[in-house]
Length: 96
Image (cartoon, rainbow, N blue to C red):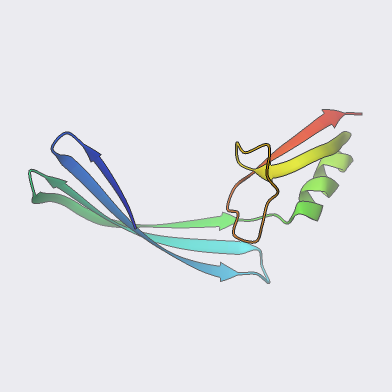
């Protein structure tokens, strides 16, 4: 659950993810509630299906494109290493 507030508007977002590791797919179901002055003004749902890549796949595709992977880290956190809990990464590579 994530809550965003701005002045008298509040957005509440619930996210539930389902991993299909065999096909490298993650399906995320979102439920949104938007309130203005404590009254619900919008409620809706979205489904996002995304393909995820393993570190060795990223390295492979970069090398096939004449790049060398220099570093893989959590998104915008250059001082850490990705873990199984990391959802987004930054790949730093140079042309070879």
